[in-house]
Length: 114
Length: 113
Image 1: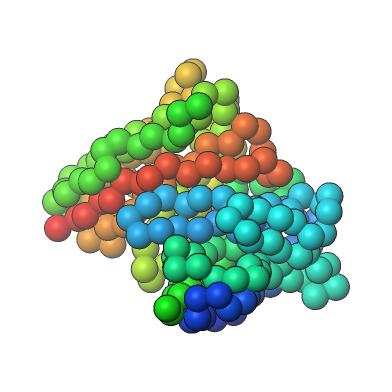
Image 2: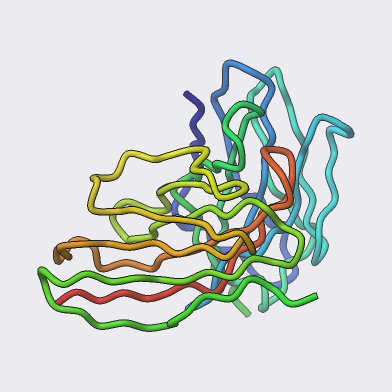
């Protein structure tokens, strides 16, 4: 079975600083990987996805993630944090034989300080 | 293109009652998945329907059930509600399968008293 671990349930950065949210996955077959963001009282919004094309994936709002098979990681980064980035971020994995089923990490709450 | 819609947005029910939640996927999407989100357990997969057939099922008791109609709209039902069923229930739609983006609705907040 596949799984996702997000290191750090809370991350705090200053406005303008680098954002780094960590995600490690476990899968016995090639995975598809996703990052979602959730603002309070809302559903999840897709930031980006990896589906075995380029290992460096660019998403919306300036976010990007790099798939590293050797490290089984898919960390999310943004060069310069903005106040509007404060939200909860979820890493998720799916595999071909699981249909649309996503397995999520525990989530990382990002705080951006002025 | 309209997004995923879920109704109702908020529900308050009493223990022992049953509830039905509805989800309308993005036009053209054939897959609808349901997730339960709670502070303690996080996001957990309930089940997925594809072309009116349940394709995947998570590890939830039989009190949780769902169905999908020919227009891809989906409903999930929870019978004999328990306090622990209080959660945000999210619906997601996708065109096909694992490699396709899933788009989430705003969720239904269920409170069981």
